[in-house]
Image (tube, rainbow, N blue to C red; front, side):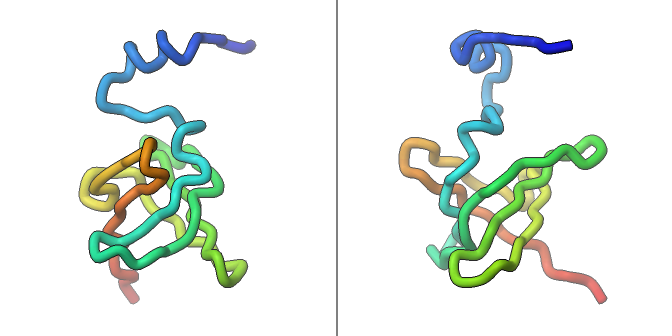
Length: 90
């Protein structure tokens, strides 16, 4: 089954949310402006969406949960998303 909806309808239904398609290609950076790479994919992992950020200078990928404590700002018009990566616990 396929559900089709216009962008305008989707935006009205999801105030304060962003369409996955709008996030693809955004430059991911820290609050101090350090570039982490580009959002290459958004995946569903349980109840949380996960942003896949591909580093520009390598093949490494950074997986960031799309939650308020990590994603601080989404600026689609400016082509960037500001994120605070969580520390890796060992």
